[in-house]
Length: 201
Image (cartoon, rainbow, N blue to C red):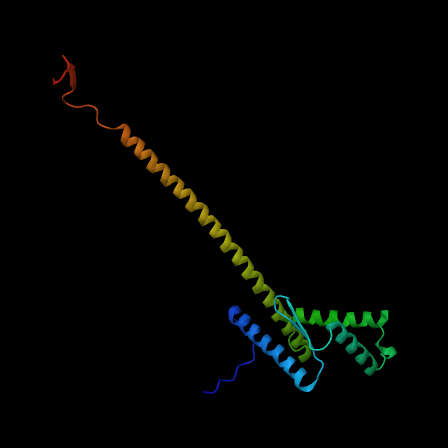
């Protein structure tokens, strides 16, 4: 039975994502080794996990040697940067900053309903992207605050349970002492020792 086509999007479940990463990383490293052996290719491979862990493979020699070779190759293949790519002078930089300020002011007016039909498609797309970023950060902050509140409530629950157990033990202890103190001693016929024998009066 043929496997279904895997939809290429981020795996939301963290466990499934980690398992997929481990399996596909191993497969990728294996394919790189096979390609190097079959075709006598020199392959260097870097993989950074979502947690920042580094996995690397150099099929021939060392990774440092491959990087030096790559640097020499790209340096020789690319022409030198033209003089126009030098840093902007003060006038051009101030002009770009003014344009950015105007775009932001338009975006603010649009947010408050006063900028209809005054923004271009590009400006609205930039605004939309910024809003998505803001919403993501707001939701992340909200989630973190909720998690902190949940942890605080769990700690409070543990404290209250401990206090409840302590009070319950005290109540049981006091009840046992109280019951022992109230042991009946006022018998209707007290025992009196007379002439070495017990007699009831």
